Length: 469
Image 1: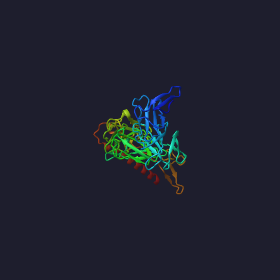
Image 2: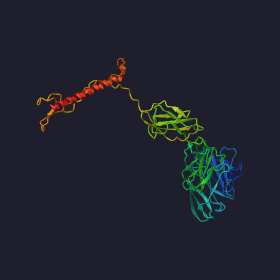
Image 3: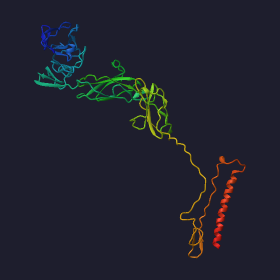
Image 4: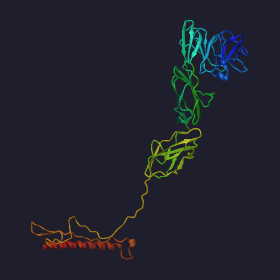
């Protein structure tokens, strides 16, 4: 790797540890030459960008940058350094953080002395003065770096001091997820209840957040940026169906790099957050196995996604009209046949090219019963007879009495128990099958009924006669 050795007669020499020759780099080609003791450091990407940094310990000598091959020459990047600063011990970390010791005595009230720190070495770069933990009057000489830990010598108090920089890494964002859609709740035409969350950085005591509808954060609206000691912030009211970009960084005790830029898109719609289910009604029964679904329209929706499941958790779908199969309107006749006498759950959400609404409330319905198959019920006619259990129609051969007759041992008289078998007339022939007659239909029933009465009377008379004999 190439590296700088030092200053001699207005030139900084560069050597190549692969056996190359020394090549002079002009210090004073554009800016006045650096004077005094000069310290140099290589950019971590020197192999590709050829950038080096130089600092002088002369008052207001400053810190400069030079890119090999850049015809503009050396450029000052120290516009924010304290007045009278004397820079030395220039080092740069693998993360690209540039540090320099300031030989001025520490004055915490005026922000002088201590160590200078710069995250981004651009034109007009911002340097932070770090004096935390140092006593007023301390003087730092030299600066050494290993990883993210620095050492220097306090010559006033004759002691070795160290500083661990835990804020060289950016903040990690957590929610809303990058490129999330359908964020927030619509109240009175505006998006509410949106929070930004991020992970804390070790050592950070305060954070700055920014929100904008421009990913360059060039025109941040009032109330869309601020500082907080927490790792989250509740946002003010936002626009409906709008994409926002956000980022966060630590600002105390020192700055961290900005986080990655994440985005989210707010919910769409007017006064409603999600479609309202209309047909089938909640808890409806007897729904056809090819139902008609209908829901309220949502302003700004280009299509609607509908899912139907046999389980409340929607782990699988009987109907899934999503993505390319999303429905263009807010009503649909199912082309999928569901099962008879089964319970189903359904929900809908509105979508457009950039976002979607929240899912509707979950509806539930039960399909109709399966139609019964038609079968013929046989009808028959004939004699109806009934014998009491234990009776017989055979004669009582031991007594010579009629069947089922017994002797009454107490009186010696005979008691005759007769089972009467009544033969009912056959069922009337259906009117449609009867031969044409002028006789009224009721007359047939009357004659049959009278015949039955006569048979019963004759049986009673027979019993009485046998008792008297």
